[in-house]
Length: 272
Length: 140
View 1 (cartoon, each protein chain N blue to C red):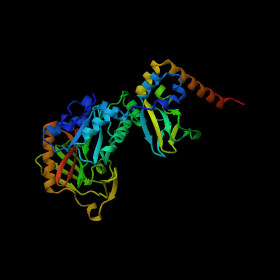
View 2: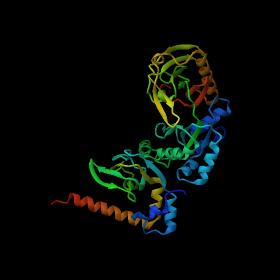
View 3: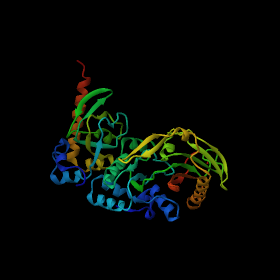
């Protein structure tokens, strides 16, 4: 089905992939997700093939969004229980204009059909034709961002664990910085806060793509979340568990003073 | 226009005996893929996901660290790993910006299975590679 729909209308993981459907559910439940659209696997493949009708359909749907755009893969079997495709499929964080979407989708489609992706599929016993849906969202320019586990992923303790750094959260996800660490109990009380060593921040650049910027010396060791922001994250953890169930792995960002949910999935680490 | 240009496929020995309709059908299965200068296109030993035709640009080839002839417009590569699901037999690096048309394993296999003419051409190309390999090992 060659579909390009607003994120909140993405309901079927076999068409749009788990990332798109998860975000769609979040929007329907009132969680703070940046505006976006979901593309089905077949329309991504059609765009990658140069199909003009498919390109027009995607371009038309994307006009509802303000560039720059974050274009993320949402493979149909991504983040499943048996094998995670995180890291195999491409995310293009800063596509500067809608004109560049076709090339971006071609790149993402090929990332799911690359030699490394196929090698991975062979290794985990999933040697099947890949289908890659895509989520396109307005790109945030966050002051701080990171990840939050709604349960301790190592000990299984009933507490929130937050890792945070300056700029886009990819610096935390990719392990490029030592992030700030916070532990919060279920009632929202801060149990521990440990400043990290955040020497770089990832920022988007106007011509497309991202750049690693040096962080000002006085910010490297300064905590990047204040009391009010930790309260907001605590509320987001509670609400996310109400919507999705316990033990969630959340990617979040504060931009212009507003908290945004970027991704929410089940914790896949040990200890639970 | 979706897929690869028909004219590009008509220049490829593998598809030369096919009629225009057959080539048009095959062309639609290909997707363009661009590689930057210096980018590794395939790496020896890796799993193989796709078969590629070169639309424009050049690429170097090495097998076990030994250089092989350069690939150019109209050349194709990647068919061995796509056929036997084994590892890539060569490393190919784009020496200029390289524009290819790729056909994945998932489309390549039924195409060959359904089309005897392509299968035969592929067999001939494989035999040529086998002869070349045998000559390389022939005792003097």
